[in-house]
Length: 563
Image (cartoon, rainbow, N blue to C red; front, top):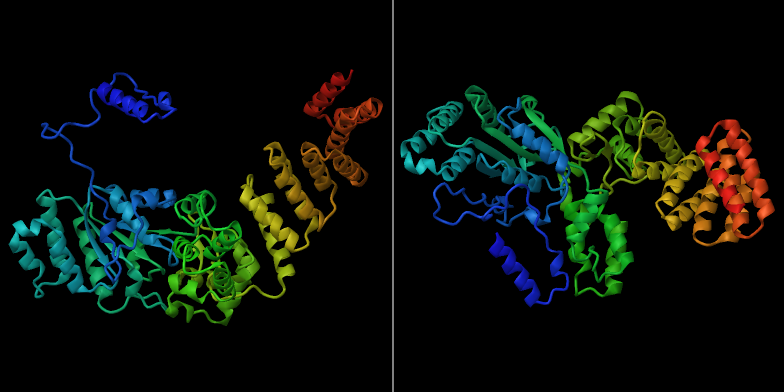
């Protein structure tokens, strides 16, 4: 270790790296002699298992999953999947479900990389008995040493389930690692209209599940599928659903793409339009990344292409939606999904049902859309309509937005103890669109106050200005004045403080005391001491009356500063 550190420092000094001295190595207890065991050392550990990403192939034989370095997010799904694959799990495996392009195969590849104690047998697409046996015969190295096993495994005279049971038992007795059966793109085995298995697949899966249950070992199943699987054996499989990338995960993905990264040569307007079109779908992000970097397109041609995609997303749908699924969208489902477009964030099932339908009809539409892969489902169970679907928002957008805002307000504001910033912004957006002034003011003032305290003054000012277009509320005027004061726009801040004070509710003495306190600060800054003292005195009286000890202390502190 000491030699390695010395060599590293010397290399940094030789290359004239100015920050070479910032390199530090912290070690608990004793410094190890070496971090790597020399080759041919007795008891030396095995090298890490290479990634299986190159074994996830599409029909053309191309690798269709991202590598370890490009994979982002999905932590909850990975953790749940690994729990389902553990030997002490009460499940026989895990199914990764969700619409096309969300990275189901990539998640499966990461699970395979993490579950290193398994022998992996990977299948793609349609699965019949011949494909199942062929995959085993070519994947298991022990069959080269036990040719008699290969003979009875491929013997069609014996029933498949008995051959599979015998194989699993023989492998366990021989001390072989358990099998991980990976069934990728399993939707090719399903009828999109019914979700039922077709062809030989029902019998093959029934035999495999029976063998796994009979042996009761550590062997597991890993399935990726766009649609829900209508089969009784799914009760033994843990379903994990994927949704689009949001917030931090989306930012990480964008940083790995040349057109959307920090150093992107693409102008900001085009990047923003591309992000809106991708709608958090990793495959669409990668497709649009290539489009934005296409050197054969000049700016006008690129603008025309983006405008065409915004008008008709058929090219995008080809990347993530099967035509057979689109054909299943009848008029009731189309109307349901169209109303669901009002939400930009995933929302609870109850909210989606209340806004998009009525009673049992809405519940059945949610179940059907989820089964067809037409809804994104978050790990918490919230649902969202992807923008790539061939549906449109209804014309009566204002009334629908008001209804949606009220439903989310009850769920995320009144009934929930906490809500995220993204959820509050969604409620605020819908309240503005639905002309719900009181709701927009209440949520907007909380958001603006938080942003001001985080020194996001311009963001707070923009939010308040947008809200004032719908409702001139004293709380919003107050927060606008606070942001303007910090940005040096003192005269405008004083005007907005005064308007907030003039329109303040007589019952909201807490807000009134804060407005007077802040207005006094403006006068104190301008040297108008008498007016400042008078206002501070008014604020102090209000603080004492309502019992606000912290506010009283702040006012006394400011008064002491003047004296």
